Amino acid sequence: MRRPAELLLDREGFLAWMIGLMVFLAALAIAAALAADGAAARWARSLAGTATVQVPADAANKLDALAAALRGVPGVRQARPIGLEETRALLEPWLGTELRDLPLPRLVDLELAPGADLAAIQKRAAEAVPGAVLDDHRGWADRLAGVATAIQAAAIVVVLLVAAAAALLIVFATRAGLEAQRSVVELLHLVGARDGWIARQVERQALLLALKGGTGGLFLAAAVIAATLWLSSGDRLRLLPQFEIAPAAWLSLVALPAAAGLVAMLTARIAVLRALRRLP
Amino acid sequence: MIRFDNVGMRYGDGPEVLHDVTFELESGGFAFLTGPSGAGKSTLLKLVYLAERPTRGLVHLLGHDIATTPRRRLPELRRRIGVVFQDFRLVDHLSAFDNVALPLRVAGAPETRIREEVTELLHWVGLGDHMDARPPALSGGQQQRIAIARAVIARPKLIVADEPTGNVDDKMAFRLMRLFEELNRHGTTVLVATHNDALVARFGHRRLRLEAGELMPERSARQSA
Image 1 (cartoon, one colour):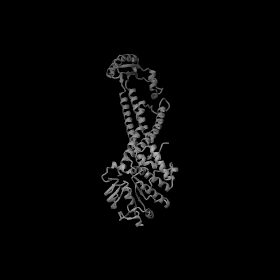
Image 2 (spheres, chains in turn green, cyan):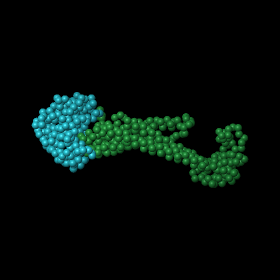
Image 3 (cartoon, each protein chain N blue to C red):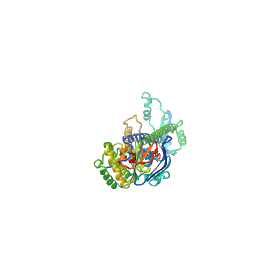
Image 4 (tube, rainbow over the protein chains, first blue to last red):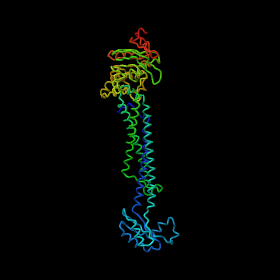
C-alpha cells in the first residue's frame, strides 16, 4: 500500500477542484480565441481572390463577350457570367418575387490569382462594355478584417485575464493549503528535515494535484468544445456561427494542465521556502 | 553537550523572557528543568532543540556554537536531538508507524531499516498492535508513547522533553521517566521540563529551576524536595 505523504496540501480536495475549474475556463477562453482566429482566416480566404464585374442592365447581351474578354487578362483564373435567373434569385430575399420585370444590373463573377492586376481588369471590362464596374470586395474585406481583429483582440484579453485569474487562484489555494499544514512543516523542520526536502514534498503534491484537477477540467472543457463544434457544423444550429479549431491548436489546450501544474509547483516551492526561511 | 552563557531571549519587541541564563549539562547527564508556568522553561527548551536562536549570549550545543553555525548545518544538529513536545505534535493523517518513522525518513534512511526499527520500537513502547492507528484514535497515553518513540527512534545524543508527563497518570509518568533513565544509561543526555515536583524528587537527578526567566542557584533534586 502506498504510504500517505507527510504533508497533505489539499486534505479537502479543494485545490484540485479549483484548479480544474480554472483550467476549464482557460480552455474555453483559448478555444474561443482559436475559433475566432480560424473564422477570421476563413473570411479573409473566402474574400481574397474573388471580384465581380457589374454591367448595366441594358448591356446584358454583352455579358458572355465581357466574360470571354476578361478571361484573357493575366491573373484572371475564371470569369463566369451570372445568368438572369441566378441574379433574380440572389436579390429575391430583398426584392421578393413581385418585381421580376425590374431591369437588373448583371454580373460576371471572377476568380483571381494572387497579385492579379485589378487596374488592367477594370480597363479591359470598360473597353468591352462601357459602364462596367469592377468590385474587388475590398470594402467588405476591410470591414470583416476589422471585425475579426477586434474579436481576436477581445479573445486574447479574455484568455490573458482567465490565465491570470487561474494563476492567482492557484497561488492563493496553494498558500492556503500550506498554511493549514504549517504545524507539520515546522515539525519536519524540527526533526531535521532540510528546506529542500520539505519543499520537494510540497511541490510534488502541488504538481500532482494540479495535474489531476487540470486534466479533469480539460476533459470537461474538451467535451463542451466538441459539442459546440458539432452543433455549429452543418445546419444543426443555425444561430451558431461555424467554429473550427485546427488540430495543431488543440495541442495548446493539452498544455494547460501542465501549465497549471507548473504554476502550482513553483508557488508551493516559493511559499514553503519563504515560510521556512522565517524559522532558525 | 549543552552550555548556556549569559543567554537572553525575547520574542520580537516583547519583554525578555530569559535573563542571563548560564548552565552546563555534560554529555550523558540527566537534568530536570522546573519552575512555575511562564518561568521560561519552554523557551529554554526551544533554544536547546534549535527552534529559536538566543537574542544574546552564547549557546553551545553538541560541540557547536549555535550563533556561528550556518543555518544549513542546523538540520544535521537537529537530527541528533530527540524532542518530546508538550502537545506531542503528532501528524494526524499519518499512522503511528509513519509518525515514529518521520525522523528516519527525513534523514534518508532506507525503508527496510525503517520498517525493522520502527516496528521494534513500537513493540517496545507497547504499541505493537496499534501501528496502523491514526493518533486521533489513540488515548493520550498512547499518543505520548508515540511522541517518545519518535523522539528516540534516530538514537539521538540528546533528548529534550517538555512536560512529558503532563497528560498522563502517575503510573504512566513513572514508566516514562524509567524509559528516559534507560536511554540515559545508554549514554543519551536527557533534559526534562516538568511541573511535577514529586517526580523530580522521586528520580533524584540534577534540577535546574527557572523563575521569571532567571535560573536559580542549583540544589540537588532531593534537597529541593
